[in-house]
Length: 183
Image 1 (spheres, rainbow, N blue to C red):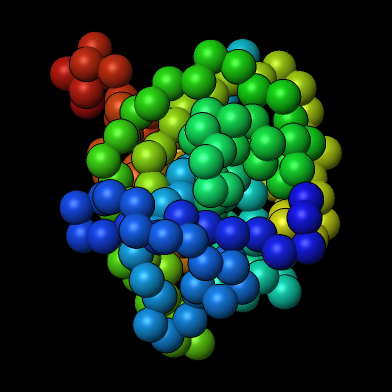
Image 2 (image 1 turned 120 degrees about the horizontal axis):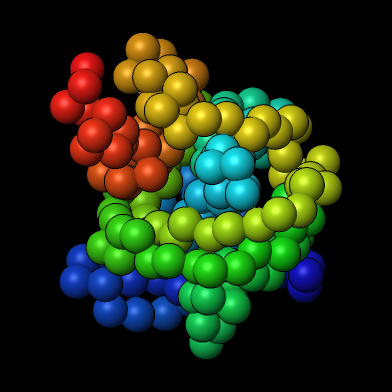
């Protein structure tokens, strides 16, 4: 990782309009920029959730999806997903599926810092156990997706807003049709 990470700035239509240092982008007037989220599933069907490190600028200590990140200028999004998987949670992921290509959100945390992103959402697979980077992740858990969906519905304030919004749209967090009919 370079000392200065850059993010890709976007207009309201998702067109690239420039770049800016990541450290300068997240504030009370955050410009729309490109990001991504990834939900990692293991062979047991569990999804990896992580708790953001306590010193993170936005949503410190909050439980969230497996990992997130920002593609560097001119970096393909899939390359950025693989890069962040290794950097943030120490995982090599495979079978990436673009689950929500147009996901977009704006959220304000308790300190007033804004996240404002066009954020394609991926689901990936791994058989490896995470080796989280303590600068990024305070702790992690493998959980049943339906149990996580129930927790998100009951206590959305305990999770990142992007995880709550993504889970509402991802098939990963829905019961299969046979289970829905039986209940």
